Length: 186
Image (cartoon, rainbow, N blue to C red; front, side, top):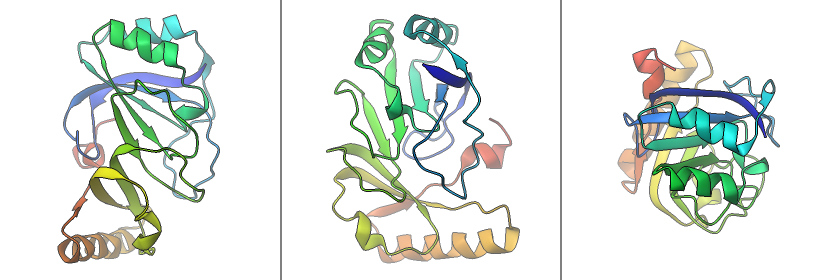
């Protein structure tokens, strides 16, 4: 597995925002989103055991598999190792590839390709005014809109206003702010 980094911080987005978590950032992605704020191409090859051992160095039970796109490399055996160590395994995925069945929490953040996963616990849409009807077929328990961060204060402020207005008009959706950016942490 090519791993970009493994680090410990607070979950910054979505349902588990504020939760102490170990992040396993996989290298590589099958999409090229122009707003991506992650340098995920670099990384080192690690075995599943090395990844699991690195995760165990931290006290948090909550593990977030992210990227890049973790579904390109994630295996059922790594999920099993993490479970055996008493960890809760969450994944942040664009939903374009199948996932191991045993993942505990699935956050799907769809982008430009069709979603193929059959379930997600949380649908998190990075919002820039797009037609939300395109996501209505994705089954999810929780629905979050996250303002797209374009590194432009004026554009970001307008986008936040649109997200607030959309959530007020569609109360099944909640806003997800990138808490880690507000707190200036990883």
